[in-house]
Image (tube, rainbow, N blue to C red; front, side, top):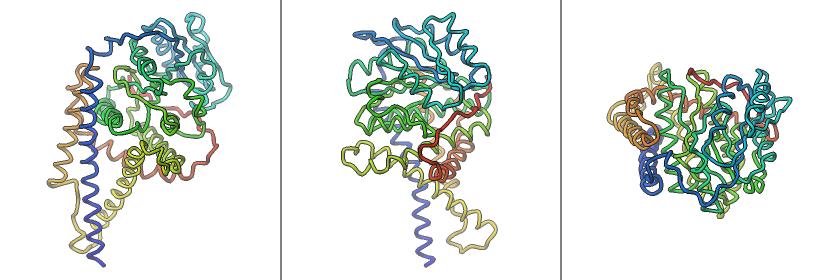
Length: 419
């Protein structure tokens, strides 16, 4: 019996080592294929594509307690390099003067319309209201603290104009808050992890999620699937799955830059990553029945990838518990001292991690200068972010199982980092 347990444990440890190794190289190879096939064109974001037409665009900005940021966001949007657009700001029950600031901005920015909710209805409801009030077929949704690059709209619109099957386009978020170690690490993470994943997923299947901070939509596609669900903690993951399960296409546009604020405290980072992870689990559970259908087969790689990552997290927990028990209890020799964190497995994973960051930063250096200076900061990524992502994965599944369908998901107060 002990031999069987030890054999199973060794297989599990092998999985813990080979799964992240395989996924890292899959993402790197997929991202490089994407880059040389679609991305390495022109000189960069300012070298905007020539559109056959310039349809009107509605930019929707849901806001909750964004008084420190909303003036900058709206003023920045008003200077977009595009001939025909409107701005719709949805004040979702703010209590910090955001509504008053938006009303003042509307007097000096003719493109701006403001919608007020008396109480906190949640981001999904704010996006719904903005979409229904929009005059345009094409919508661009950004957060109330984000700065959309002035040349972003043509890059987003080209996908809709060249393919009627495109329902949405996700842009390229870039981190503004980088005055602390956590902020600097996230700059590399968005390039080497999130950016690589989106590029690779476009090659081998569907995109797991759009970036909620900067996304563009075809309104008729949203109408077909019923817009955003209001009971999911991550409306961006949910709408990504709804559209793709309805056989719409989602694209990634790395030239559509959007400068965003991110947490720079461990508490803020934990809350954000727990919400992301819970949202992924909620989507996994809600759309599980759809994945048994042959017509949904293009979502299988993304679904299997996320399901495997959940299994990896709980497997890591189990192995970690056995290792901790071995520190205080005299376990059989075959169960002592195993680990993938030291020896050649740990060295291989560490070198692969550094290679992944090098590839990601090299690809994104097209959009932002000086990323190479942050490369050696990335050695801290596994110590902090792997542990946070591991434990949020473990905690999020029970939270998703307990979440009640139909219960409104409302805004919290996010950590906006240190400027």
